[in-house]
Length: 111
Length: 113
Image (cartoon, rainbow over all chains, first blue to last red; front, side):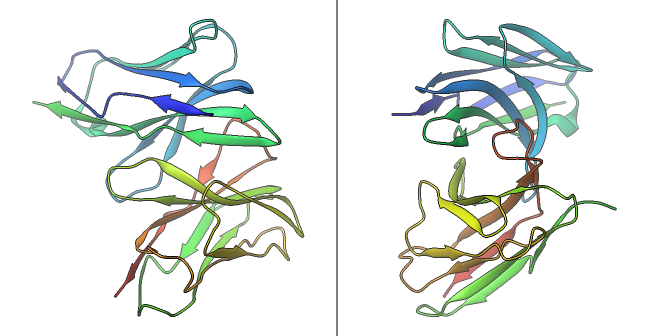
């Protein structure tokens, strides 16, 4: 089957660095995406990793290790507006391309 | 402005009634998707369409139906057969099926009374 695991909640202080981990199990793995969703809002795309290594986009970075079926999202210089839910999502090809989302990690940023 | 629109934002229906949720995009994307999100949960795929006049069931298609008669429109009908329809429904699109970036609409919050 296909499954993704990520922590349900993470709390950090403003200005700090936080890492949100994601482990996955899927037979047709193509890549790992990260989305941000504020309460009541729509998810917005943050990053995508198809190959091993680190991708950096401003304050956000995403890492993938295909051999470990593991990735993480790194948020630096945390701001209050970063308080949101973060979803990892696997792009999977099993009988057709699909995106499978994890349950999400709720990030609380404290002053 | 290009984007995805969903209407209405909030919808209330009586149990046993069918209801249709609208999703329109002007991004010229081939692929469109419907997801359901329950409180504190991730997104679960209901249906997706890779091209006009074609659609496939996702993981939780029972009790739902869709059509894709036009490239820009992908309406979702929640039928009376859906046992627990109260949820947040999100429509998304991507340039083509399987691309890494999906663009989401603002969502419709459906409450069945």
